[in-house]
Length: 262
Image (tube, rainbow, N blue to C red):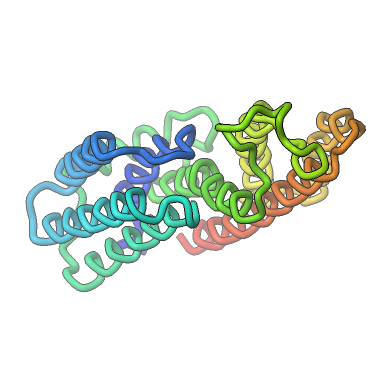
């Protein structure tokens, strides 16, 4: 658990940097990828200082950035889930660095700052440790952008997304009834839905509350389901809701088990 506690600031910093993908379904581009790499590299040096492990961690991030650029330039239209693949590569590589080298320790002041922050955030108990706060934040970030990437990849594979280059009026109404506005709204609604389910699971509250969350979402979208040619929208809504809930339950349960082990 000590290795995990030392890695959590890096994991959370990485996920915060990757929030740039939240509103960027298309390619990020070479310039933005370079800026993202520089920010991640600077974050590593600030968190851990100069050491062999820091250099190895920087190489892992550099490798992931290279994969990102390669996928964007050559195979972007084949599947959108490659962004999750590069995240997995980075998390696995960082874990191996911490395990094999064993000298990955936070720079002076970082851990005390995290403890102070955890103790003064009104949403959490004052007894919350830095490691516990990092775990909770990790789960929230994973359920925001990263789960959104996975769900968007599934939508892309099933052709349940609007085509930006084609006006909505020109599309076949029997096949497509999902507008760009629905698609954008679904992103925000899905994140809030996952966060609520996650907090219910982590807090150990009555899981029947999840039913009320899903019912509220269905009520908001009910009139949209009554329109003509809404079959594709119903598929989009059902697949997105089930995937969101499943991811929130899995990550929430995993985080809860780790919190109990602290």
